[in-house]
Image (tube, rainbow, N blue to C red; front, side, top):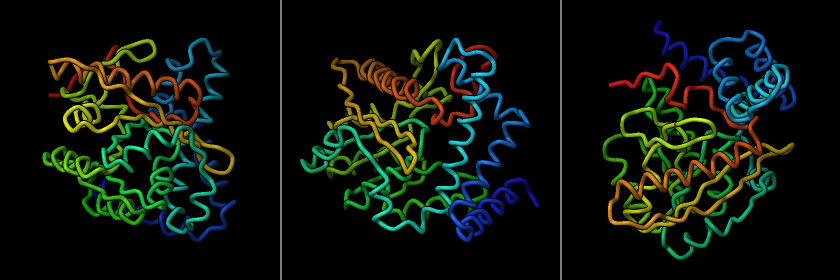
Length: 295
């Protein structure tokens, strides 16, 4: 059996078994898995620790290790949520969310202006999406193609069951997203990492990172509002912090996009600095050191 098929089997088994376990036992098990991964100190944990070192400079080795361990537990909490959330009812979804400045999102939806929400890999963004879908807000997002195909289809169905319109990431998706925005809908995009040549270089903490142009480009071309969201965990659920992004004026679109993406990155950095343990960046994001751009 291929590695990608084994990965799919593991995910499907998790989706079934974790839903059968008592809630406390399930989350306790995922915390155990997180701590084992931290103790193993593999490449994934080392990358998380390295990223957090740049986000929170000046920590002692012990403090950094403790923060990275908390980050790994937060990341595994997200996966436990993912496997169990299909059984959550509307009351649980709505009662476990707190929000700052929700009008930044709700007002352009009511006005049919459309709004793009850009967010980093933090907290549980699916829970955030469930919260707004449960209020009847039309939400559109993009699902990255995974291998094998059946795993990709599983995640597509998962987000559609939440109430989202989930679009496969392909060459046609930008045009479809633009159409949805012109219809006054909410488009939510995870947007803190793009190491391809189309990614935009931004100043991010102590170095240069690369982030996608999509949210800024969509807002500029459609006239939709642009908002960032940082999702962090609370004891009982999540907190969403919305921040407005002022679209940069100018005649040259590429310059407007680059400057607007930088504003998004600045908002991401503020959220990450406040809740670094909930930033689930277990991959490279900075394009310095030994970074080699892929063709």
